[in-house]
Image 1 (cartoon, rainbow, N blue to C red):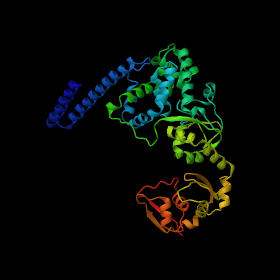
Image 2 (image 1 turned 90 degrees about the horizontal axis):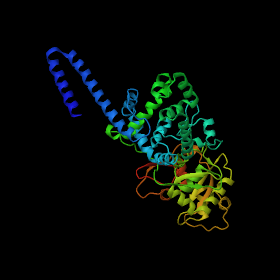
Image 3 (image 1 turned 90 degrees about the vertical axis):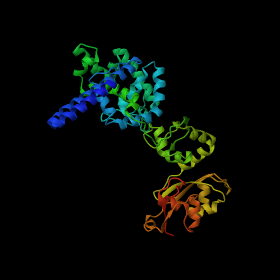
Image 4 (image 1 turned 60 degrees about the vertical axis):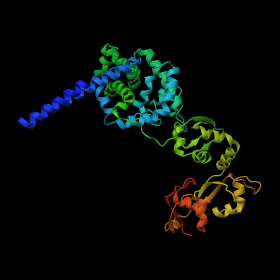
Length: 433
């Protein structure tokens, strides 16, 4: 590295001196020579670093000129992808490594999911391949991945990883070489075997010129991803920051069907978070006996209030929402009583009791009430009275009390608020009275 530095410096001085004597044409020539030396220096670095990875792996991770352009791409113009993969790996790699180790497979195969789907469990190809490991429908069925109107287990991180491990084992028993396993995973074992038969070699690099472009580039891409993920720091590639909870998760089996809106209200979780941890569900409905992955604290909260939560789900599922209605989840506060709540939402006390199966008017702080309210007429929202800037300590209830005739629900409806949380400094619109 030091010798190369002085050599480059000498060439730059030579270029400068020559430019003074004979003009810019010589400078351009010497500049080309410098680029050649820099490229050669990168080649040496790539080769040495991949050699270190290769020594620790049963897979072929050696450098060659076919790998070079893919490494340049991932540490250059596509480095944002590697940055994002470093963030997402915290969620998926522990799972991959556990299953690969259980099946006695090389742990480096975890990087294949980056090649296949960029760690997106809902990724779909033009040909219909789906999930982290991009299973086609028939191949997925062969390895036990169920696809129904509600669920696609090719998108289930655990089940699809187990299926991929079984497929890797089968391919290795057929070809006995990890480069050929990768090529067969991409092109299909039948296609690869026909190429082996026609070329007369089991060496991937000898087959390389005879393979279709996608399969030909598949192994070099895999090697380049291994390099980029292991040496990203050396190329100033830092992990991306994602707005997704990456803490401890747990699973829960629900005993009755529930839609995502209801589950979001019960658990106080964003719908995007629930969808993210449960990508195998195709619709925003979780059928009876579904097993859901959720943040640990949400699972604990659900189990701690299991009876009340299922009662709430029952209430929601029983009533069909009319076209001009909206379902609201209201949490009882200090000082609340049925009459006041009914007046705020423009409903009757007997309706509140019916919707929530209440035998008395007694309420406890924290109780959850389902309320079906008429959608706020858009004509009344066209000319809002004023804007209000949220102050520190403000609550929706407090703001509604400041401006008589305005209810919490009307404020939420007009400002499209999903929760009661207000951020200081944000401007909200107050409806006309």
